[in-house]
Image (cartoon, chains in turn purple, green):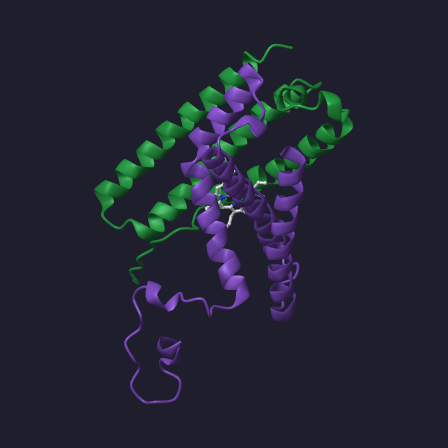
Length: 132
Length: 116
Ligand code: HEM
């Protein structure tokens, strides 16, 4: 990133960047950064779709309608939210461990970031197959 | 005296701890939920069966309460990072609290009326 070289050896300090330019968030970010922003996005998505999830809970609990009887769009939405939860869960555990200073070295952090991505895909598929 | 402009998320130790404590409970609950689902024979397995298993109604209610608390801290952090105009930010904070209280009550209603 070009802005991070400020004040290294050249005499005058450069103006410090005031905000994170979202255009710099392209896909060539390091994996831990991707895991981090996806954690935020998944948390926001879960919050926004909480009413939908409560509707689903109400429907299953009272009419005893199963997830298998949903329409295609509702199924896809539920699957996406399942992934959001499983992902937020896995990445959340990783952050909790990092907070306890477990796995903070660069290599370990990269590895655990990959594990989070892989595990959440696998777990989502497993649960998805079990439910439908 | 240095005048510091402390802005942005992630301040407040109490909230930081609360967000982690609620996260730990939600992890535990998720594991318990899966274990209970696996313990129920598949011909009887349904969401309803899991939620009416012993203790599960209480644990689930606790899950939704911690979820709402956790989500409140989380969305507040997000608003603090991206929404700069103070009035709008305040309005969003209030709206988030209100809907989350509503969701908690809604979840409680579903669980209480679930019938054994
Ligand atoms: C097993 C369940 C969960 C775990 C382990 C978990 C874990 C965490 C952790 C550790 C954080 C702090 C991250 C940080 O400060 O960088 C966090 C943030 C957050 N969580 Fe969760 N969470 C869970 C469930 C949920 C649910 C169900 C929702 C939504 C309804 C949610 C919404 C959020 C939001 C919006 C944030 C703020 C994200 C940010 O500041 O980047 N979480 N979660």
